[in-house]
Length: 102
Length: 312
Length: 88
Image (cartoon, rainbow over all chains, first blue to last red; front, side, top):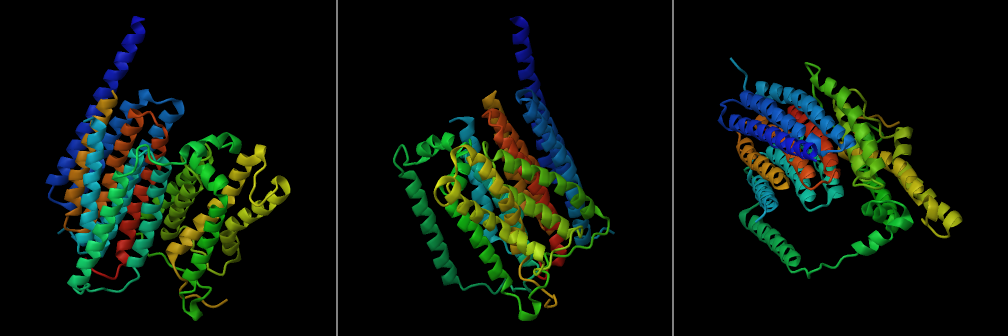
């Protein structure tokens, strides 16, 4: 059953590649968190890069999940996208108030 | 040395670091933030220990209810001079005592016989008779349903005790969580979109708790967090403590349980007994008012004693 | 595959440790509030990876709860800090 084996191999490769991409974005986000000079820029690095990393990780895990579970993973990602980007607005406003920019 | 072991070691180091930081940091607000982070990390640890029901509860209570409680308390206490803390010998004794207790617990865990004594096989063996698939739910609502019933009563009593802290003239008033002026409407937007999702997830956790990890208490904590969110955003008003509907909701959980208990006399022979075929249906049926009542109780407990209200 | 997923989970947790150390030592309150955001993404990623590595879909429910509650925690931090009466 060569086609079945090729499919399985393709699935494994897809997962490894996308999850590694995700891990790379997490690394980028953490490096930004450590190296950026300012609260707002750190927040930016955290929210954008880490969320993208999460998206890639979730994408890579989809082939391993059954129908309902895959839907749940997608829902988790959409929820995190939406809520973290909006909640970070509130934190950013607070950071703005604590250190008013010139 | 498997990779999973490295994950566990990493989590353990992280937990210890955060715990140490919470104790050492100067600002109380920062310590509260650390404590909420600690709770969320702990839920990761529970997942690694294969206790997923507890992981759900820790996430929901630790960051939702307890976090809000600590934050609300912080916004109410007046300025405390952090330089004026307890004297050194007292802190040393407290620290030694805590270390001793931790060491004792660690030794007990390490010295447990192999296999550790457990009632899990018996609990699992009784599951088909009860009709639910999740042993935690079976324990909470079938084997030890009486304890769960008493817990609901205790919650209501705790709330009455909390309300009694108000001055006489404030009785019947409205408690306050905290205030936030929302210049851009970001909070309002969040409070309009997150709670419906949260309610859906809570209903899902309640429903799936019969056979999979989940259950009533996790659902209650989620509902409580969502309700608190809409109150802080100003979309819902905190109910007055002499509101009849609120009081009815608060006692409905324990009352439903009591009704079920007395019905047990008629349909199955003794207090809180379930008839064999309808056990699961009854369990889910009593969980619904219980969840709503506990959610309301949790929110009112976080909100604290009533304030600035007129006596009705 | 399980080992690979666990390895990535360990990596993400390592990044979480670094991130938390940096953020909790930060100088302003807003810095420290970001820790809830950090957990909301890294913690959820670690949970999803673990759920797939051990084939336990219930862990994804924990990730779902964590998503909602980390957001609630961030919101609670950011909105209650204005009402405080004590200083940093």
